[in-house]
Length: 268
Image (cartoon, rainbow, N blue to C red; front, side, top):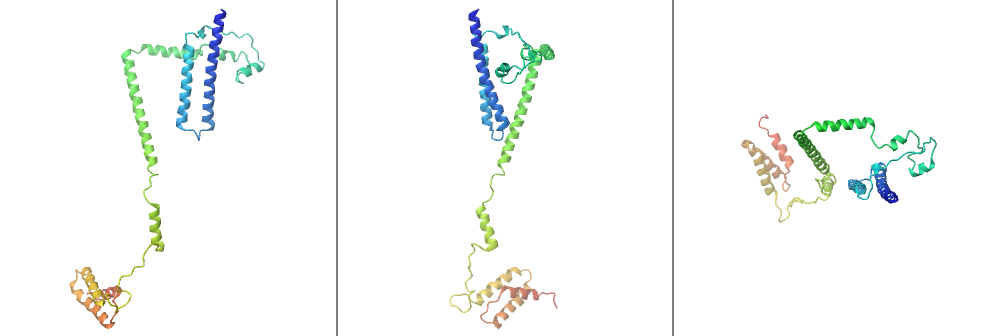
């Protein structure tokens, strides 16, 4: 009898140690969820779940060990019930049970569920026994199919959300090129002051004269006015007359345009 009591005490100590570790892990995880949710990452949540799962497995191994006595065969009988506050009970239960009265004893010393819960459990057991093996297998397959479809939809939504979140972050332009283009258009930054040869003045050697420019101008007019050949000769004569009246001065395109506009065929 004394040996069984010692074995029971050792088993209770081991069980209390495992339960205390599990309680501490649960408390720290709940604290993180309530106070550090903004900095909480998914890998840390998975680590907490893995720790809790390992501690639960260790607790089950302790309960299923061959040297652990069957706690269900042990009976706990309350000896004293009092509505007064018990400081020793407060310390042992860490403030969860202030009094040991007739109101809390059924909840803390119950070895069976509530009668309503027990009745529902019996009803579920009876309904499960009525289903045949083939029908149960079909229901299992249908449930697995629904779960697979749901998981596929969830994974698809996650992929789409990830791709949608990455797409706006992808840069499609070069800020340096954009700034350079705006500066060139607005302020002329980076543009060269190149001027064509022959524009500095007439009569310089090695530079094209007015005849060359006139030839280029008349050629441009011939391309633009290809549809009205009857107007080409007056326009050319007007340009030649302007050149003859002002020797050494290059005719401008503005004057040519004005002359071409004034020589409209429908004007009298």
